Amino acid sequence: MSAIESASLAGTRPFEAAERCDRCGAKAKVRAVLTSGGELLFCGHHARAHEDSLRQAAVALQSVS
Image (cartoon, rainbow, N blue to C red; front, side):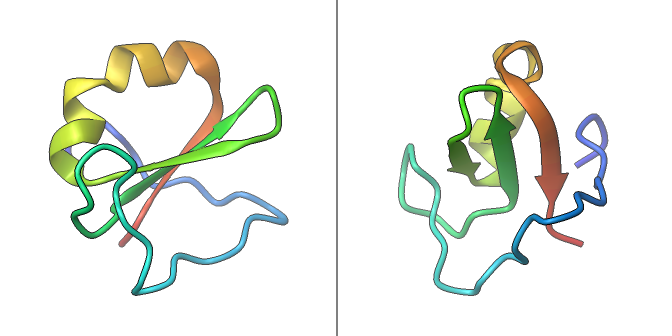
């Protein structure tokens, strides 16, 4: 992903192979940690499609290497 950079988030658990996109069920590539304390998982396609909204709502975005 070119526009979503990998972030090192202290206290954030690592990605697990079984984690899936909240939109379509594909393998999760991006975790959005929200200001409300929750998190959303997205595949690369949906992360790129919703990147602007995610950046406004999220504290941080973390991508799988």
